[in-house]
Length: 241
Image (cartoon, rainbow, N blue to C red; front, side, top):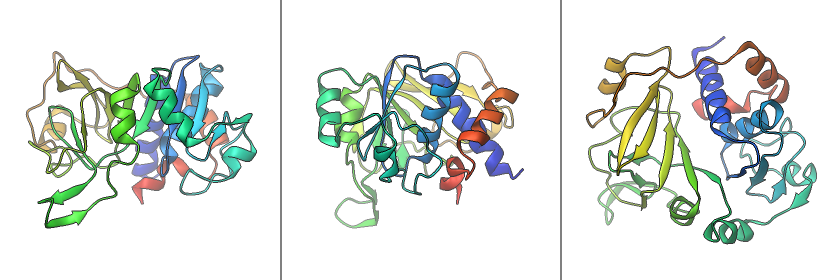
């Protein structure tokens, strides 16, 4: 098994275990890992989880044929109902969206998220896609979970180059650890079994805050078996390239 496959399995199972039975959960485009994690949670411990997605499908029966973008028409065709994107925003603003999976490129200890530019806003080194739904969903969803397949000092920085959105994060999961946002700061929630606190600090551009060193639970044999069954094409590892 390739290292990235092992890490993607760990991250996917960790995300699935963050989701509770009965929660209403949304993922957007290019969200293969959360998409698979949501399906895994429904198979394991959260059969009443409501899976919403950007093309508008509700509780798709399978994600085996989903396109690379995690926004394929099959998520609607295999769904129980249709719930369009504009209704997702309304749902969240009414306080009825339990979890939203969102992305970002830079993060700092204060919970600021940058998905807009790298460098000066007027003359950026790189212009990014922008906030899209995150500017609405991070402030309004009950729990905002960010996943990122890179963890280095260019991603976790002392201060983001641009604040696309801020605050109200719940968890950030990376190939090295899980951060939890509390008391206005990112705190280290757990580090993954394959790493060390020294490696996490070396790849983080701000001092780590933690009460004790805790380790992320490794995937169980059952979780891995179901994961391979529901995602035979390994979409969960797509973002590792």
